[in-house]
Amino acid sequence: MLTIYGDVNSGNCYKVKLAAEQLGLAYQWRAVDILKKETHTDDFLAKNPNGKIPLLEMEDGTLLSESNAILYFLARDTALFPTDKLAQARVLQWLFFEQYSHEPFIAVARYIIRYLKCPPEMAARLQSTQEGGYKALAIMEAQLGKTPFLAGDRYSIADIGLFAYTHVADEGDFDLAPYPAIRNWITRVEQQPGYVPIG
Image (cartoon, rainbow, N blue to C red; front, side, top):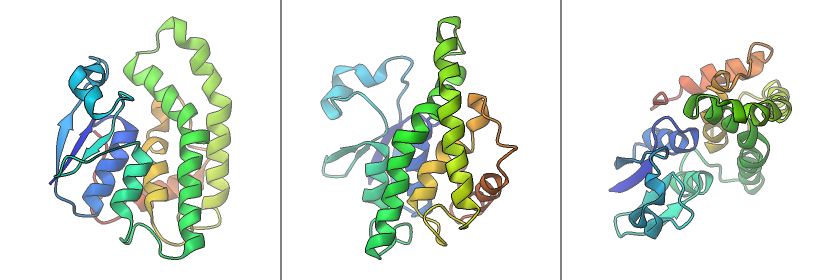
């Protein structure tokens, strides 16, 4: 059985949980509290020297970190990852976009507000996330105005990867009202078999 170390309210951890659920995988969830520095204990750092979650542990003790790498590992050779070479690259393109152009803004804003309770010293950092976050949403809106899912006509881990923080973007003070294609896509994701909510 797989073991997933994570925080149920973290988008990066949620995307792994959602994929595991939708793939019908047997796994156990090990809760890790980042605010209590549980990712910085000697035991955890022995598993992931980077001190971050999610972390996947296989039955034989093999470990894999980084949420989108875990998504790829779980989904390869399943319906959540295409077989065509270019289609595969499109999925990876969106996963790289999520980590470099989306997560640093939308996820960071949510973390400052939800986890840190928006301390005054973080006000400028929070404000700095707005431009990049809305740029990422505009790019997603444009794509989802053309195709039902981010990488084309089929639901994939590209959608899981971007859904995790996008559907709770309001918790980072991002308004999704101007993005009807994103809102419709959120509904489509929530209608996928095996869907489970965050938290």
